[in-house]
Length: 214
Image 1 (cartoon, rainbow, N blue to C red):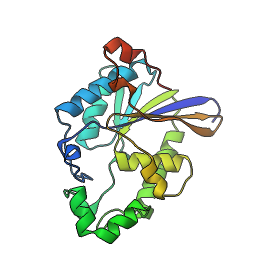
Image 2 (tube, helix red, strand yellow; image 1 turned 45 degrees about the horizontal axis):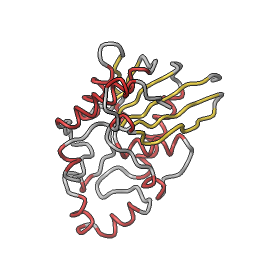
Image 3 (cartoon, rainbow, N blue to C red; image 1 turned 30 degrees about the vertical axis):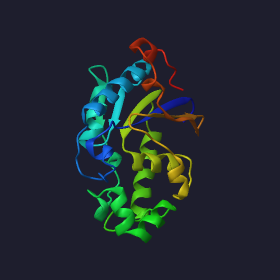
């Protein structure tokens, strides 16, 4: 498809489990007070977007942020494919404990092996990310906002770039309520920025609203 389309990928706001460095995965953990504030801040930044639709993971921490961003002016659509990676045996556990209890598996994961004990396999998670990219490619709106989770968003970005899962996964930093922008122009995708959090450094709402998106 010719023309230019932009996608704004937003990671959900902070949860108590994020603050504890605890694996959430498919556990449906809501935003905490700070996470709600973060979502309201990124929503101000995204007011300037012409997006008519906000796509969201079904998990409440992403959906809460998506609802705040959508407000009463945008349509909210849930895509099951945007749900977080299933971390199987690691879910509910703290990162430090996993490094001790699953030393070799954790080391392999950090080196770029996506399989997690009892969780989604590398093939499954990468196929799901690829399906998201295919569906995004069918969207004709000039701009679209996508609210999801750290792991699956990194994989979606790798799939967009046609890059295999590898240690590159860990070189993509995605903070809570950061914005990562991508553009498709004449069939070619380009990342415009990654992990933009300038909206948290501004002192007033007007300064946030006036920040460029990409």
